Image 1 (spheres, rainbow, N blue to C red):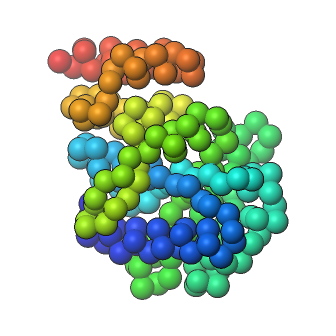
Image 2 (tube, one colour):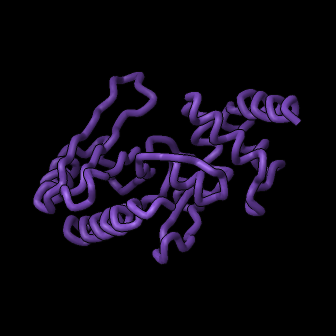
Length: 199
């Protein structure tokens, strides 16, 4: 992990924990994005900290909680923006959070879980030590599924990176079964064919 990310990541985890306590609603979260890909051993430059998060009830349907969380984070000197997608938007709710200036303008994009398998992925998240702090990140199989579902060029590059030198936790047969169940099997097979063509 790049040195500048460690204090910001520590602060974000403190904020999530304190908000859970203050607002009496447990916020589950795990790293996704470039930092999680790098944590699984893929060389990856990133300028962002990204999370998948969930709580019950979800702020997707609970506007009061959305406002409470925004107010709490703003009192901690953060800039907060809720981005609400349209009805057919693949990302119905995103929390964009900027930390105080002392953290060099870093912050996080927090994708709120909106599919059952997102919640299952959070339940399977793995705790590791990064820069002397314990963080949770998605299991590599769930991270691949999330990125296949997003389908952007960087997402596909990340999938190929994870498949090129897979961590021992990754079970390819199980990944294929999960991808097929989520109708992501063709996307996964395309990535595997691309990798085979490069070898």
